Length: 198
Image (cartoon, rainbow, N blue to C red; front, top):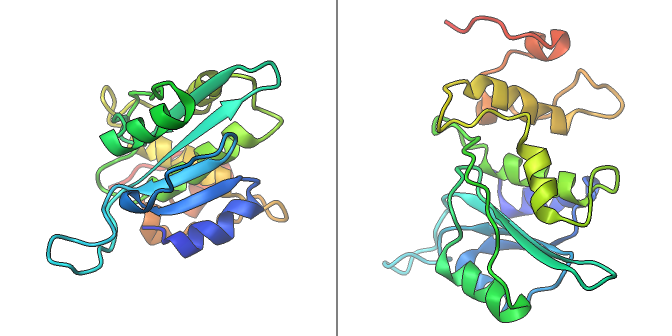
């Protein structure tokens, strides 16, 4: 799983306006528009007082436009809704409830949640793709991925995800460590075709 320091290094390279990356109980009381918040669903400390290692990355962003339109989206790669602490925070700061997609794009057999978060945050903040609607941008981001509530083709989703992290200098070079995603051969990325996995 990605660490917060890895996220903090990658975010500016991807054009992500990262404002916060950490445990959910450490979220600031005031959240800013047009900034991305990446949240680990664990609290900073467990019931035993020991520091938690983290469990699952989710994220949210609220956008305000020049004409005053406001929108907030919460994204969990498992398609789950926001925990109460995040819903309450968004309601207090922006007066609305966040929309969230229900499409499950992440397999339970990997720890790619942080990579999905970075890919989503990059897409919704890239001027080439962003519109005035975070909801529409999120739906557009998710459109090529299979919904694992209805499909078993997580290999396709991982193959698509890897393409968000292609090197600009060498598009065949994918800097994701194999153990993080682990199911797609480099040959598949080069040819754009899936090999049979045995």
